[in-house]
Length: 230
Image (cartoon, rainbow, N blue to C red):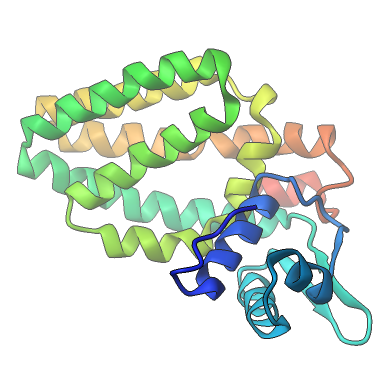
């Protein structure tokens, strides 16, 4: 794990640990030690402690007094709440983009779409990062880059599910949904763009029960009917 010694270590360390949890390199139940991480990076324990607190605020780790810090299981309720917020925000974002009618944005999104098609066949993690870039590009183009930054903490559990379940996703479906969003933006169709975005972000409602059944040890136990009702 590399970091830039010329920059503040705290935010970098948080980002490194967050990425490890989100990508499931640090799996639920894994105990992480302030002392070990401090030694590994050659730093004091204070920035490690601060990083743990920030990760706990995101629901990624649990700090247990006198017992240490462990990676939390994924809470399906938090996944679905994040999806709910994302749908509301991104539905408005695409409407703003339709009103702007930015042809250069459409070209950029189509370029990213072509790259996604390649990555889906050979690099799961890079495909997920490309998917993230797609949504961030739209948010920034709509002048809502700060909103997208705020969403990062809210959707961390949703991101964990994506990395956990790459093999269960139908990537052709995701790419087709991205294309439908681009087409609607290009055609100036506000209703179509919003509907395509909502359909895209609701896919997790169908996928989550299957992902949970395939990875029961990773999730907080939740009755399936509670998931379907949200």
